[in-house]
Length: 523
Image 1: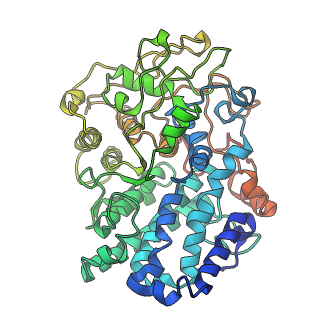
Image 2 (image 1 turned 180 degrees about the horizontal axis):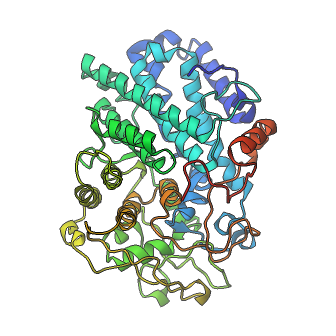
Image 3 (image 1 turned 60 degrees about the horizontal axis):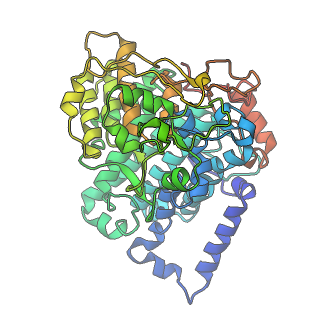
Protein backbone atom coordinates (compact mmCIF):
# COMPACT_ATOMS: atom_id res chain seq x y z
CA UNK A 1 0.00 0.00 0.00
CA UNK A 2 1.64 3.23 -1.23
CA UNK A 3 -0.57 6.27 -0.76
CA UNK A 4 -0.19 9.45 -2.78
CA UNK A 5 0.60 12.04 -0.20
CA UNK A 6 -1.01 15.39 -0.74
CA UNK A 7 -3.61 15.81 1.96
CA UNK A 8 -7.37 15.29 1.61
CA UNK A 9 -7.86 15.56 5.33
CA UNK A 10 -5.60 18.55 5.61
CA UNK A 11 -8.46 20.29 3.84
CA UNK A 12 -10.86 18.61 6.25
CA UNK A 13 -9.32 19.63 9.52
CA UNK A 14 -7.97 23.06 10.43
CA UNK A 15 -6.48 21.37 13.47
CA UNK A 16 -4.12 19.46 11.21
CA UNK A 17 -2.90 22.54 9.39
CA UNK A 18 -2.07 24.22 12.68
CA UNK A 19 -0.47 20.99 13.86
CA UNK A 20 1.79 20.76 10.82
CA UNK A 21 2.75 24.41 11.20
CA UNK A 22 3.83 23.62 14.74
CA UNK A 23 5.96 20.75 13.51
CA UNK A 24 7.50 22.92 10.81
CA UNK A 25 8.32 25.65 13.28
CA UNK A 26 9.86 23.21 15.70
CA UNK A 27 12.07 21.72 13.00
CA UNK A 28 13.22 25.10 11.73
CA UNK A 29 13.95 26.74 15.08
CA UNK A 30 17.48 25.49 15.60
CA UNK A 31 17.61 27.07 19.05
CA UNK A 32 14.96 24.59 20.23
CA UNK A 33 15.70 21.27 18.58
CA UNK A 34 17.15 19.97 15.34
CA UNK A 35 16.40 16.95 13.21
CA UNK A 36 19.85 15.65 14.09
CA UNK A 37 19.09 15.93 17.79
CA UNK A 38 15.81 14.11 17.29
CA UNK A 39 17.63 11.19 15.69
CA UNK A 40 19.39 10.49 18.98
CA UNK A 41 18.06 7.26 20.53
CA UNK A 42 15.42 7.19 17.76
CA UNK A 43 13.57 10.15 19.28
CA UNK A 44 12.72 11.32 15.78
CA UNK A 45 10.86 8.08 15.15
CA UNK A 46 9.11 7.89 18.50
CA UNK A 47 8.06 11.33 19.63
CA UNK A 48 4.75 11.19 17.74
CA UNK A 49 3.78 7.79 19.18
CA UNK A 50 2.45 9.00 22.57
CA UNK A 51 0.02 11.32 20.82
CA UNK A 52 -1.13 8.49 18.57
CA UNK A 53 -1.74 6.23 21.57
CA UNK A 54 -3.64 8.91 23.41
CA UNK A 55 -5.59 9.92 20.31
CA UNK A 56 -7.30 6.63 19.48
CA UNK A 57 -9.82 8.02 21.92
CA UNK A 58 -8.94 11.46 23.23
CA UNK A 59 -7.73 10.44 26.67
CA UNK A 60 -6.65 13.97 27.56
CA UNK A 61 -9.85 15.80 26.56
CA UNK A 62 -13.01 14.97 28.48
CA UNK A 63 -15.11 17.03 26.07
CA UNK A 64 -13.74 15.16 23.07
CA UNK A 65 -14.04 11.69 24.56
CA UNK A 66 -17.61 12.44 25.60
CA UNK A 67 -18.60 13.28 22.05
CA UNK A 68 -16.32 10.69 20.47
CA UNK A 69 -17.69 7.75 22.41
CA UNK A 70 -19.80 8.43 25.49
CA UNK A 71 -22.70 10.14 23.71
CA UNK A 72 -22.67 7.41 21.09
CA UNK A 73 -21.31 3.90 21.56
CA UNK A 74 -21.41 3.89 25.36
CA UNK A 75 -25.17 4.28 25.03
CA UNK A 76 -25.64 2.05 21.98
CA UNK A 77 -23.56 -0.72 23.56
CA UNK A 78 -25.73 -0.81 26.67
CA UNK A 79 -23.22 0.49 29.20
CA UNK A 80 -24.44 4.01 29.91
CA UNK A 81 -27.42 6.25 29.33
CA UNK A 82 -28.31 9.93 29.26
CA UNK A 83 -29.87 11.14 32.54
CA UNK A 84 -31.85 14.04 31.03
CA UNK A 85 -33.88 14.87 27.94
CA UNK A 86 -31.28 16.92 26.05
CA UNK A 87 -32.66 18.69 22.95
CA UNK A 88 -36.21 17.87 24.07
CA UNK A 89 -35.21 14.18 24.09
CA UNK A 90 -34.30 14.28 20.40
CA UNK A 91 -30.65 13.28 20.51
CA UNK A 92 -28.37 10.35 19.78
CA UNK A 93 -29.88 8.37 22.65
CA UNK A 94 -33.29 8.48 20.97
CA UNK A 95 -31.87 8.02 17.44
CA UNK A 96 -31.86 11.64 16.30
CA UNK A 97 -28.24 12.26 15.36
CA UNK A 98 -26.69 15.43 16.78
CA UNK A 99 -24.04 16.50 14.28
CA UNK A 100 -22.07 18.58 16.77
CA UNK A 101 -21.78 15.49 18.98
CA UNK A 102 -20.68 13.19 16.19
CA UNK A 103 -18.00 15.33 14.55
CA UNK A 104 -15.48 14.38 17.24
CA UNK A 105 -15.70 10.73 16.21
CA UNK A 106 -13.73 11.71 13.12
CA UNK A 107 -12.04 14.91 14.28
CA UNK A 108 -10.11 13.19 17.08
CA UNK A 109 -8.36 10.20 15.44
CA UNK A 110 -7.90 11.88 12.07
CA UNK A 111 -5.34 14.48 13.21
CA UNK A 112 -4.07 12.65 16.28
CA UNK A 113 -3.52 9.23 14.73
CA UNK A 114 -3.89 9.10 10.97
CA UNK A 115 -2.12 12.38 10.23
CA UNK A 116 0.77 11.42 12.49
CA UNK A 117 1.13 8.10 10.71
CA UNK A 118 1.09 10.00 7.41
CA UNK A 119 3.93 12.20 8.58
CA UNK A 120 5.95 9.14 9.63
CA UNK A 121 5.30 7.54 6.25
CA UNK A 122 6.36 10.64 4.35
CA UNK A 123 9.59 10.85 6.34
CA UNK A 124 10.52 7.29 5.46
CA UNK A 125 10.28 5.96 9.01
CA UNK A 126 9.01 2.60 7.73
CA UNK A 127 12.60 1.98 6.63
CA UNK A 128 14.50 4.21 9.05
CA UNK A 129 12.72 3.10 12.25
CA UNK A 130 10.80 -0.04 11.26
CA UNK A 131 10.04 -1.10 14.84
CA UNK A 132 8.63 2.29 15.86
CA UNK A 133 6.74 2.56 12.59
CA UNK A 134 5.20 -0.86 13.30
CA UNK A 135 3.89 0.44 16.62
CA UNK A 136 2.36 3.36 14.73
CA UNK A 137 0.64 0.85 12.45
CA UNK A 138 -0.88 -0.92 15.48
CA UNK A 139 -2.27 2.36 16.81
CA UNK A 140 -3.46 3.32 13.33
CA UNK A 141 -5.32 0.02 13.05
CA UNK A 142 -7.00 0.54 16.42
CA UNK A 143 -8.21 3.95 15.26
CA UNK A 144 -9.04 2.81 11.72
CA UNK A 145 -11.17 -0.19 12.63
CA UNK A 146 -13.16 1.86 15.12
CA UNK A 147 -13.93 4.39 12.37
CA UNK A 148 -14.97 1.66 9.94
CA UNK A 149 -17.12 0.00 12.61
CA UNK A 150 -18.87 3.32 13.27
CA UNK A 151 -19.35 4.80 9.80
CA UNK A 152 -18.67 2.00 7.31
CA UNK A 153 -16.55 3.12 4.33
CA UNK A 154 -13.77 5.60 5.15
CA UNK A 155 -10.63 6.90 3.40
CA UNK A 156 -7.94 4.56 4.67
CA UNK A 157 -5.55 3.03 2.15
CA UNK A 158 -5.35 6.36 0.28
CA UNK A 159 -5.68 8.58 3.32
CA UNK A 160 -4.37 12.05 2.54
CA UNK A 161 -4.19 11.50 -1.21
CA UNK A 162 -6.41 14.25 -2.66
CA UNK A 163 -9.52 16.33 -2.12
CA UNK A 164 -11.66 13.69 -3.85
CA UNK A 165 -9.98 10.71 -2.23
CA UNK A 166 -11.56 7.31 -2.74
CA UNK A 167 -13.22 5.79 0.30
CA UNK A 168 -12.36 2.15 0.93
CA UNK A 169 -15.10 -0.38 1.33
CA UNK A 170 -15.23 -1.96 4.76
CA UNK A 171 -13.83 -5.17 3.27
CA UNK A 172 -10.90 -3.33 1.66
CA UNK A 173 -10.11 -1.62 4.94
CA UNK A 174 -10.30 -4.86 6.92
CA UNK A 175 -8.01 -6.64 4.45
CA UNK A 176 -5.51 -3.82 4.94
CA UNK A 177 -5.80 -4.14 8.72
CA UNK A 178 -4.87 -7.81 8.51
CA UNK A 179 -1.95 -7.20 6.14
CA UNK A 180 -0.50 -4.35 8.16
CA UNK A 181 -0.89 -6.06 11.54
CA UNK A 182 0.83 -9.18 10.21
CA UNK A 183 3.77 -7.14 8.96
CA UNK A 184 3.96 -5.11 12.16
CA UNK A 185 4.19 -8.28 14.25
CA UNK A 186 6.90 -9.71 12.00
CA UNK A 187 8.95 -6.52 12.24
CA UNK A 188 8.64 -6.32 16.04
CA UNK A 189 9.57 -9.99 16.41
CA UNK A 190 12.64 -9.41 14.26
CA UNK A 191 13.59 -6.38 16.36
CA UNK A 192 13.21 -8.43 19.53
CA UNK A 193 15.35 -11.21 18.12
CA UNK A 194 18.07 -8.80 17.00
CA UNK A 195 18.22 -6.92 20.31
CA UNK A 196 15.89 -7.90 23.18
CA UNK A 197 16.65 -4.65 25.02
CA UNK A 198 16.15 -2.28 22.09
CA UNK A 199 12.60 -1.50 23.20
CA UNK A 200 13.84 -0.16 26.52
CA UNK A 201 15.98 2.41 24.72
CA UNK A 202 13.81 3.22 21.73
CA UNK A 203 10.24 3.08 22.99
CA UNK A 204 9.94 2.78 26.77
CA UNK A 205 10.14 6.54 27.28
CA UNK A 206 7.28 7.10 24.83
CA UNK A 207 4.81 4.41 25.90
CA UNK A 208 1.77 5.87 27.67
CA UNK A 209 0.28 2.48 28.48
CA UNK A 210 1.07 0.14 31.36
CA UNK A 211 3.35 -1.92 29.12
CA UNK A 212 6.52 0.12 29.55
CA UNK A 213 7.45 -0.08 25.88
CA UNK A 214 7.82 -3.87 25.92
CA UNK A 215 7.81 -5.09 22.30
CA UNK A 216 6.88 -8.64 23.32
CA UNK A 217 3.67 -7.33 24.90
CA UNK A 218 2.85 -5.12 21.94
CA UNK A 219 3.19 -8.16 19.70
CA UNK A 220 0.54 -9.85 21.86
CA UNK A 221 -1.71 -6.79 21.56
CA UNK A 222 -1.36 -6.79 17.78
CA UNK A 223 -2.12 -10.52 17.54
CA UNK A 224 -5.16 -10.08 19.79
CA UNK A 225 -6.37 -7.17 17.66
CA UNK A 226 -5.95 -9.36 14.58
CA UNK A 227 -8.04 -12.05 16.29
CA UNK A 228 -10.69 -9.46 17.24
CA UNK A 229 -10.98 -8.30 13.64
CA UNK A 230 -11.07 -11.87 12.34
CA UNK A 231 -13.98 -12.73 14.62
CA UNK A 232 -15.66 -9.49 13.54
CA UNK A 233 -15.95 -10.71 9.94
CA UNK A 234 -16.84 -14.30 10.84
CA UNK A 235 -20.37 -14.13 9.43
CA UNK A 236 -19.63 -12.23 6.24
CA UNK A 237 -16.33 -13.85 5.21
CA UNK A 238 -15.94 -17.04 7.29
CA UNK A 239 -13.01 -18.46 5.32
CA UNK A 240 -10.92 -15.31 5.66
CA UNK A 241 -11.97 -14.98 9.29
CA UNK A 242 -10.84 -18.49 10.13
CA UNK A 243 -7.51 -18.08 8.35
CA UNK A 244 -6.71 -14.82 10.14
CA UNK A 245 -7.94 -16.06 13.51
CA UNK A 246 -5.93 -19.26 13.44
CA UNK A 247 -2.83 -17.37 12.28
CA UNK A 248 -3.18 -14.91 15.16
CA UNK A 249 -3.73 -17.63 17.76
CA UNK A 250 -0.81 -19.76 16.63
CA UNK A 251 1.67 -16.95 16.05
CA UNK A 252 4.75 -17.48 18.18
CA UNK A 253 4.36 -14.03 19.69
CA UNK A 254 1.23 -15.09 21.57
CA UNK A 255 -1.91 -13.24 22.65
CA UNK A 256 -2.64 -10.75 25.41
CA UNK A 257 -3.53 -12.38 28.75
CA UNK A 258 -4.26 -11.19 32.26
CA UNK A 259 -0.57 -11.71 33.01
CA UNK A 260 0.25 -8.68 30.86
CA UNK A 261 -2.92 -6.79 31.81
CA UNK A 262 -5.12 -4.48 29.80
CA UNK A 263 -4.10 -2.15 26.99
CA UNK A 264 -5.05 1.13 28.62
CA UNK A 265 -3.54 4.60 28.88
CA UNK A 266 -3.30 6.81 31.90
CA UNK A 267 -4.85 10.25 31.86
CA UNK A 268 -2.40 11.36 34.52
CA UNK A 269 -5.28 12.84 36.50
CA UNK A 270 -8.80 11.39 36.51
CA UNK A 271 -10.74 9.20 34.13
CA UNK A 272 -12.86 11.30 31.73
CA UNK A 273 -15.94 9.29 32.70
CA UNK A 274 -15.51 10.40 36.30
CA UNK A 275 -15.82 14.01 35.19
CA UNK A 276 -18.72 13.25 32.84
CA UNK A 277 -20.72 11.30 35.43
CA UNK A 278 -19.87 13.11 38.69
CA UNK A 279 -19.03 16.68 37.75
CA UNK A 280 -21.01 17.22 34.56
CA UNK A 281 -23.91 14.86 35.44
CA UNK A 282 -24.18 13.84 31.79
CA UNK A 283 -24.10 10.05 31.97
CA UNK A 284 -25.41 7.32 34.24
CA UNK A 285 -25.40 3.52 34.35
CA UNK A 286 -27.48 1.76 31.70
CA UNK A 287 -30.43 -0.41 32.72
CA UNK A 288 -28.91 -3.35 30.83
CA UNK A 289 -25.94 -3.45 33.22
CA UNK A 290 -28.29 -3.39 36.19
CA UNK A 291 -30.42 -6.17 34.68
CA UNK A 292 -27.59 -8.54 33.74
CA UNK A 293 -25.08 -8.00 36.53
CA UNK A 294 -27.76 -7.48 39.14
CA UNK A 295 -29.49 -10.70 38.18
CA UNK A 296 -26.20 -12.58 38.23
CA UNK A 297 -25.24 -11.15 41.64
CA UNK A 298 -22.06 -10.22 39.83
CA UNK A 299 -19.42 -8.60 42.10
CA UNK A 300 -18.18 -6.61 39.13
CA UNK A 301 -21.28 -4.40 39.37
CA UNK A 302 -19.82 -2.63 42.40
CA UNK A 303 -16.59 -2.10 40.46
CA UNK A 304 -18.45 -0.56 37.52
CA UNK A 305 -21.05 1.59 39.27
CA UNK A 306 -21.83 3.47 42.44
CA UNK A 307 -25.01 2.97 44.48
CA UNK A 308 -27.81 5.34 43.58
CA UNK A 309 -27.92 8.53 45.64
CA UNK A 310 -31.67 9.04 45.33
CA UNK A 311 -32.92 8.30 48.88
CA UNK A 312 -35.98 6.47 47.53
CA UNK A 313 -33.72 3.82 45.96
CA UNK A 314 -32.20 2.70 49.25
CA UNK A 315 -28.60 2.58 48.01
CA UNK A 316 -29.37 0.07 45.24
CA UNK A 317 -27.65 0.05 41.87
CA UNK A 318 -30.08 1.68 39.46
CA UNK A 319 -29.60 2.22 35.74
CA UNK A 320 -31.51 4.12 33.07
CA UNK A 321 -32.87 2.61 29.88
CA UNK A 322 -31.39 3.96 26.65
CA UNK A 323 -33.71 6.50 25.11
CA UNK A 324 -35.89 6.58 28.20
CA UNK A 325 -39.18 8.37 28.19
CA UNK A 326 -38.30 11.31 30.38
CA UNK A 327 -40.67 13.20 32.63
CA UNK A 328 -40.16 16.01 35.11
CA UNK A 329 -38.50 13.71 37.62
CA UNK A 330 -34.72 13.76 37.98
CA UNK A 331 -32.53 10.79 37.03
CA UNK A 332 -29.38 12.31 38.48
CA UNK A 333 -29.85 10.23 41.63
CA UNK A 334 -29.47 7.00 39.64
CA UNK A 335 -26.13 5.17 39.63
CA UNK A 336 -23.04 6.95 38.42
CA UNK A 337 -20.38 4.89 36.66
CA UNK A 338 -17.50 4.19 39.01
CA UNK A 339 -14.11 5.60 38.06
CA UNK A 340 -13.24 7.27 41.34
CA UNK A 341 -9.91 5.46 41.71
CA UNK A 342 -9.24 4.59 38.07
CA UNK A 343 -7.42 7.08 35.82
CA UNK A 344 -6.85 4.54 33.01
CA UNK A 345 -8.79 4.55 29.74
CA UNK A 346 -9.10 1.00 28.37
CA UNK A 347 -8.92 0.00 24.71
CA UNK A 348 -8.46 -3.75 25.09
CA UNK A 349 -9.30 -5.90 28.08
CA UNK A 350 -6.88 -8.76 28.57
CA UNK A 351 -9.80 -11.17 29.02
CA UNK A 352 -10.91 -10.49 25.44
CA UNK A 353 -8.42 -12.94 23.94
CA UNK A 354 -10.03 -15.82 25.87
CA UNK A 355 -13.57 -14.95 24.81
CA UNK A 356 -12.47 -14.55 21.20
CA UNK A 357 -10.91 -18.01 21.26
CA UNK A 358 -14.03 -19.42 22.91
CA UNK A 359 -16.15 -18.13 20.06
CA UNK A 360 -13.68 -19.36 17.46
CA UNK A 361 -13.77 -22.82 19.03
CA UNK A 362 -17.59 -22.83 18.93
CA UNK A 363 -17.31 -22.05 15.22
CA UNK A 364 -15.06 -25.08 14.77
CA UNK A 365 -11.77 -23.24 14.32
CA UNK A 366 -8.45 -24.39 15.76
CA UNK A 367 -8.05 -22.09 18.73
CA UNK A 368 -5.72 -24.37 20.66
CA UNK A 369 -8.30 -25.45 23.23
CA UNK A 370 -11.99 -25.88 23.97
CA UNK A 371 -14.69 -23.24 24.08
CA UNK A 372 -15.50 -24.17 27.68
CA UNK A 373 -11.92 -23.76 28.85
CA UNK A 374 -11.51 -20.38 27.16
CA UNK A 375 -14.90 -19.19 28.43
CA UNK A 376 -13.96 -20.06 32.01
CA UNK A 377 -10.51 -18.53 31.61
CA UNK A 378 -12.03 -15.32 30.27
CA UNK A 379 -14.28 -14.89 33.29
CA UNK A 380 -11.47 -15.78 35.66
CA UNK A 381 -9.16 -13.29 33.95
CA UNK A 382 -11.81 -10.56 34.29
CA UNK A 383 -12.11 -11.25 38.02
CA UNK A 384 -8.33 -11.30 38.40
CA UNK A 385 -7.86 -8.00 36.57
CA UNK A 386 -10.40 -6.36 38.89
CA UNK A 387 -8.81 -8.02 41.94
CA UNK A 388 -12.01 -9.90 42.79
CA UNK A 389 -12.34 -13.31 44.40
CA UNK A 390 -15.12 -15.81 43.91
CA UNK A 391 -14.66 -16.62 40.22
CA UNK A 392 -14.97 -20.38 40.81
CA UNK A 393 -18.35 -20.06 42.54
CA UNK A 394 -19.55 -17.64 39.87
CA UNK A 395 -18.59 -20.08 37.10
CA UNK A 396 -20.68 -22.81 38.73
CA UNK A 397 -23.84 -20.69 38.97
CA UNK A 398 -26.37 -22.44 36.74
CA UNK A 399 -29.44 -20.70 38.17
CA UNK A 400 -29.01 -16.93 38.10
CA UNK A 401 -30.39 -15.00 35.12
CA UNK A 402 -30.81 -11.32 34.25
CA UNK A 403 -33.50 -9.55 36.25
CA UNK A 404 -36.42 -7.36 35.25
CA UNK A 405 -35.95 -3.62 35.08
CA UNK A 406 -38.15 -1.33 37.12
CA UNK A 407 -37.98 2.47 36.80
CA UNK A 408 -39.42 4.14 39.89
CA UNK A 409 -39.63 7.43 37.98
CA UNK A 410 -41.68 6.24 35.02
CA UNK A 411 -43.39 2.87 34.54
CA UNK A 412 -43.25 3.39 30.76
CA UNK A 413 -39.59 2.39 30.99
CA UNK A 414 -40.21 -0.87 32.90
CA UNK A 415 -39.22 -4.04 31.09
CA UNK A 416 -38.95 -7.80 31.71
CA UNK A 417 -35.56 -9.53 31.91
CA UNK A 418 -33.68 -9.13 28.65
CA UNK A 419 -32.53 -12.76 28.61
CA UNK A 420 -32.77 -16.11 30.36
CA UNK A 421 -29.11 -16.99 29.74
CA UNK A 422 -27.28 -18.43 32.76
CA UNK A 423 -23.61 -18.29 33.67
CA UNK A 424 -22.37 -21.88 33.93
CA UNK A 425 -21.11 -23.37 30.69
CA UNK A 426 -23.39 -25.99 29.14
CA UNK A 427 -21.57 -28.12 26.62
CA UNK A 428 -24.84 -29.73 25.52
CA UNK A 429 -26.33 -26.36 24.50
CA UNK A 430 -26.80 -25.36 20.88
CA UNK A 431 -24.47 -23.00 19.03
CA UNK A 432 -26.57 -19.88 19.55
CA UNK A 433 -26.91 -20.47 23.29
CA UNK A 434 -23.17 -20.96 23.56
CA UNK A 435 -22.55 -17.76 21.62
CA UNK A 436 -24.99 -15.81 23.78
CA UNK A 437 -23.26 -17.07 26.92
CA UNK A 438 -19.81 -16.12 25.59
CA UNK A 439 -20.88 -12.72 24.28
CA UNK A 440 -22.76 -11.83 27.46
CA UNK A 441 -19.72 -12.51 29.62
CA UNK A 442 -17.45 -10.79 27.14
CA UNK A 443 -19.71 -7.72 27.28
CA UNK A 444 -19.48 -7.70 31.07
CA UNK A 445 -15.69 -7.92 30.96
CA UNK A 446 -15.18 -5.23 28.32
CA UNK A 447 -16.90 -2.48 30.34
CA UNK A 448 -16.65 0.50 29.77
CA UNK A 449 -15.47 0.16 26.14
CA UNK A 450 -18.82 0.94 24.59
CA UNK A 451 -17.45 1.00 21.05
CA UNK A 452 -16.40 -2.64 21.16
CA UNK A 453 -19.61 -3.59 22.99
CA UNK A 454 -21.77 -1.90 20.34
CA UNK A 455 -19.85 -3.51 17.48
CA UNK A 456 -20.18 -6.97 18.97
CA UNK A 457 -23.88 -6.44 19.68
CA UNK A 458 -24.51 -5.47 16.05
CA UNK A 459 -22.49 -8.42 14.81
CA UNK A 460 -24.17 -11.06 16.96
CA UNK A 461 -27.28 -9.66 18.64
CA UNK A 462 -25.66 -10.48 22.00
CA UNK A 463 -25.90 -9.69 24.75
CA UNK A 464 -29.59 -8.95 24.43
CA UNK A 465 -30.20 -5.26 25.14
CA UNK A 466 -33.26 -3.14 25.82
CA UNK A 467 -34.43 -1.16 22.77
CA UNK A 468 -34.84 2.57 23.20
CA UNK A 469 -38.16 3.61 24.68
CA UNK A 470 -38.49 6.95 22.90
CA UNK A 471 -37.58 6.29 19.26
CA UNK A 472 -37.20 9.62 17.44
CA UNK A 473 -35.78 8.22 14.19
CA UNK A 474 -38.89 9.15 12.18
CA UNK A 475 -39.40 5.54 11.21
CA UNK A 476 -35.83 4.89 10.09
CA UNK A 477 -35.32 2.42 12.96
CA UNK A 478 -38.41 0.20 13.41
CA UNK A 479 -39.80 -0.06 16.92
CA UNK A 480 -37.85 -2.58 18.96
CA UNK A 481 -34.84 -2.47 16.60
CA UNK A 482 -31.43 -0.85 17.07
CA UNK A 483 -29.14 1.67 15.44
CA UNK A 484 -26.70 0.04 12.95
CA UNK A 485 -24.20 2.84 12.25
CA UNK A 486 -23.67 6.57 12.64
CA UNK A 487 -24.30 8.74 9.61
CA UNK A 488 -21.41 10.79 8.24
CA UNK A 489 -21.12 14.06 10.20
CA UNK A 490 -20.28 17.37 8.56
CA UNK A 491 -16.64 16.88 9.57
CA UNK A 492 -16.55 14.34 6.74
CA UNK A 493 -19.24 15.50 4.31
CA UNK A 494 -17.99 19.09 4.15
CA UNK A 495 -14.57 17.88 3.00
CA UNK A 496 -15.74 16.15 -0.15
CA UNK A 497 -19.42 15.61 -0.76
CA UNK A 498 -18.67 13.89 -4.05
CA UNK A 499 -16.39 11.32 -2.40
CA UNK A 500 -18.97 10.65 0.30
CA UNK A 501 -21.77 10.21 -2.25
CA UNK A 502 -19.65 7.81 -4.27
CA UNK A 503 -18.92 5.73 -1.15
CA UNK A 504 -22.56 5.72 -0.04
CA UNK A 505 -23.75 4.65 -3.48
CA UNK A 506 -21.05 2.01 -3.90
CA UNK A 507 -20.97 0.43 -0.45
CA UNK A 508 -24.06 1.47 1.52
CA UNK A 509 -26.76 0.89 -1.05
CA UNK A 510 -27.20 4.62 -1.53
CA UNK A 511 -28.44 5.05 2.05
CA UNK A 512 -26.46 7.16 4.51
CA UNK A 513 -28.82 6.22 7.34
CA UNK A 514 -28.51 4.98 10.90
CA UNK A 515 -30.50 1.91 9.83
CA UNK A 516 -27.97 0.97 7.13
CA UNK A 517 -25.88 -2.02 8.24
CA UNK A 518 -22.20 -2.01 7.43
CA UNK A 519 -20.46 -4.87 5.66
CA UNK A 520 -19.88 -7.27 8.56
CA UNK A 521 -23.29 -6.60 10.15
CA UNK A 522 -25.46 -9.36 8.72
CA UNK A 523 -27.26 -10.28 11.95
